[in-house]
Image 1 (cartoon, rainbow, N blue to C red):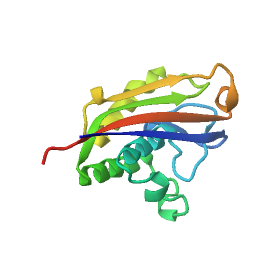
Image 2: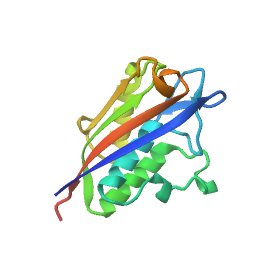
Image 3: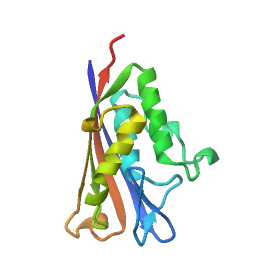
Length: 160
């Protein structure tokens, strides 16, 4: 049995914050604002995985009102989401994610992002696709006010 989920996240770019995407600390003049590390890529991926199984979203599992998640490393949250999926009898078939950012250029970091995600989810890197695009200077991402990400997850029922 297969289940498909979609995830989306967006965070504002601000000074005095790190830019972390896919668990990679990317050198940049600004970073993403959020209760956790604001890793929009991982947040979209987690929402797609949870959504595929009708288990809510990351706000349900890791509320931004909870102090325990202030500054949280989203790689740890992703690892927990992968565990939740396994507890519900599902593993990743594949994930296809896209980061929308005008800057910085993300191509040099994509393989490391894919490896990070595969490692914590317990799957092969070939099951994880991460792409990056711009919006040609249009909208809030094009104006460098924020970064967003979309993800689609195909979750597969494990054989018992």
